[in-house]
Length: 343
Ligand SMILES: C[S@@+](CC[C@H](N)C(=O)[O-])C[C@H]1O[C@@H](n2cnc3c(N)ncnc32)[C@H](O)[C@@H]1O
Image (cartoon, rainbow, N blue to C red):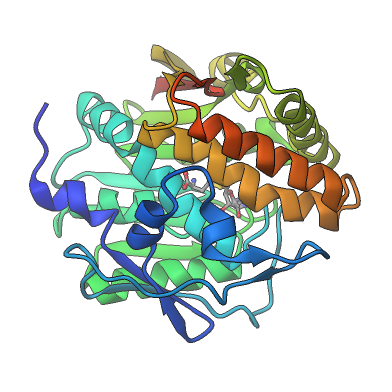
C-alpha cells in the first residue's frame, strides 16, 4: 500500500499551542514513549489537576508551520472525556496510531480526489485534515463537532495549513440538523459511544446521505477486550470505571453494537465489516493509545469522584511496570469498521 509522503506526515506535523505556550506533541509522543505520557508531559497534582511545568518544547523535522490553537476560556459544551488540552493532545496521538488503518480503509472505500465527505463528531479535526488533503481542492469536507474548543482548534488548523475545502460547523448531532450536501462519503469514528441517541443520529445520517453514497464507521464493538496479558487487576477495575462513566453520561461504550440493525432500518446496506484488534508489546506505537488514555482519564475519574489518588497512582505504577516489561502484552479494545451503502 502506498500513500504520498505528505499524507503520512500531515497528522504528525502539528505544533500545539496551549494557553499561549507551545508544546510540540510529536515530540511529546517520543519523549513519552514508555507509557508515562502525562507524568512526563505534565505532573499530576494530588488533587488530580495537572501542571505542565515539565512540558518543554522539543522541535523535530516534522514540526513545521501547522499549529492547533486552543482557547480554553470559550463557552464549552463538554462531554465525558472532556475537551481540555490533554484530551486534544490524546486525540492527536490516537489519530496517528490509527492512521495507517484509517488511510487503508478510506482508500479501499474509494475516498479520493474530488469526493465530498461528511465527518460526524470530528473532534479537533485530525481526520478531517487528512480527508481534506486527500479530496483536494475539487473535493470538500464538512466537519461537524459540538465542542467549541475543538471547533476552534480545527478551524485554526485548516487556516494554518491553507486548506480551504472544508466547512466546519459547531453543531450538536443530537439537537442540530445535519447540513444537506451531495456527499459521497460520511466518516464517523468513536462518536456513537458518546451520543445519547444512536438511532436518532443514524436516522439523521440516512436523511442527508444520497443514494449510492458510502458511510464508514470505526466504533467499539466490545470494549472489554481491552486487557493486559498477564491481566492487571487495577487496569480491569479502571476499565470498569470507564464503561460505567460513559454509560452514566448517556452513552454506550460498545457504540457499534446496534449499528447493523440501525443501518438496515434506515436504508443502508452493509458492504463490509472488519474487526480491528491488536495484541501489542510496550515497544509498539499502538501501546501508547490505551496508555495515554489511562493517563488522561485518571484525573477525570478523580474529578467525578469515582476513584481516589491512591488508586490512580496504583494504576499508573502498574502501567509503568508493564511498560518496562519486554514480555508484557496488551490486547486493545475491539473496534469494528463498518462500510455501508445508502440504497
Ligand atoms: C472520542 S472523540 C472522537 C473525535 C474524532 N471523531 C476522532 O476520531 O478523532 C468523540 C467526539 O465526539 C464529539 N461528540 C460527542 N457527542 C456529540 C454530539 N452530540 N454532537 C457533536 N459531537 C459530539 C465529542 O465532542 C468528541 O469530539
